[in-house]
Image (tube, rainbow, N blue to C red; front, top):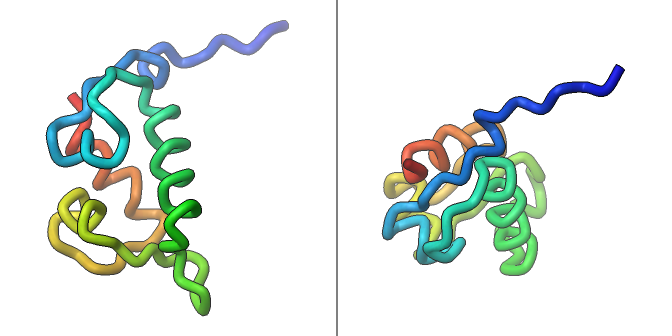
Length: 85
């Protein structure tokens, strides 16, 4: 039996101005937003080299992370959800 996808995850969400600086302003599903933010983190080498679970924010991500300079990968979705509507 095929697994039914959760449509709440696939519903396109519009990033606010802060998150649009990183992802662009086009509506996208939450899953795609997480993929794009990880691509941005890897492209800009923002993952901590010693503790790979931590993300060191640059100026754009610091705004998304509510002013925090370091967040864990587990906190990432919590911060993303605040900027998607």
